[in-house]
Image (cartoon, rainbow, N blue to C red; front, side, top):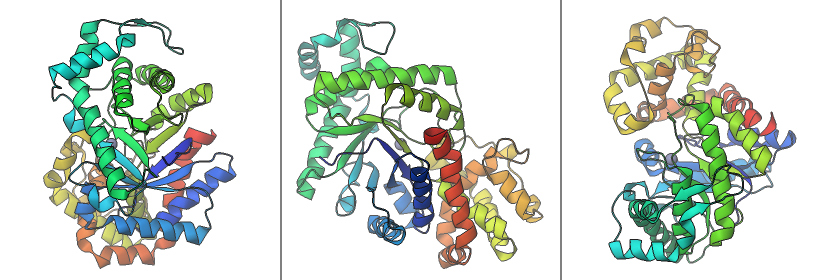
Length: 416
Ligand SMILES: [Zn+2]
């Protein structure tokens, strides 16, 4: 097992031009006193849309580490993989997000459910977990229901882990289990049953991404009951600490927060929870570096601003097709989107004001931002026109990329 650091932060780099600017944010964070390890993540869906390969992500990350002389660890995440998509990542990645959300709810064999309940009598009755005020009270029937719902998914995670280990010929990697891309949140008692079942699978899971309560839309703030999130997050931490001892899971096991970028209203609750418990955290952010590229181009003005406007117009034109694959993780109201003609007259300040996630700016438009978040396909189709502009305006873009990660994300989460 490759042991994961306590604090890790996932960044995404759609076009593989910003790894250095991203890594500079980790340097600033380290200088400010928090050791946070970068994880470059890219899902198969993103690779397909951009037309890129995992080898490209690896090359960009290695080059950035070289260029800046980064001495600490860094990881490459095969994000949201399954049996169909994992193989092309194997030579390049050392972090695997085993996505078993599709197997949630597919009923497990009744014999296996019976065997699970017989093996885990400790889950039944009144369970007192340090860090949770009230005991968790469960009946045999409760455990059966949860097991029936999740057992298949935990078995699939075990199979996928063993497939990766066999093909790689080693276990020198980090394994995450993700269950976030599903409809219903997992409660802390369900998380406990899931961890017991993952313990039975006998592989070293180091991060787990449950679906939390509330909405985690791409690139915008958390939408939901912050107080309820905080209670649930704290209870999840307590469940994890308990499960590490009870089921022999790695001491490094920690929560992973997906779609974690821009969730400004829950950063303080998370920070408080980490400070109180000393727990670790993995937080995944991905698509917002691409938005900082657009902000940088808009800031540069002239032809670069025109390019940013053209990308918006094309994204608006293809709105339905672009939004469709992301329907469960965005809320774009077409009535709140500016027309292409309106945007034609925008200044640099108008464009960056609408796009940059600054809730105190009256120009900020989360609908404009979310549409562009899923609009990277338009830029991918522009090919060299887009990547050429990234090179020509590398400085202003890089400044925005670094500032976004460090000032708006790392500072509130890790520095204060
Ligand atoms: Zn996810």
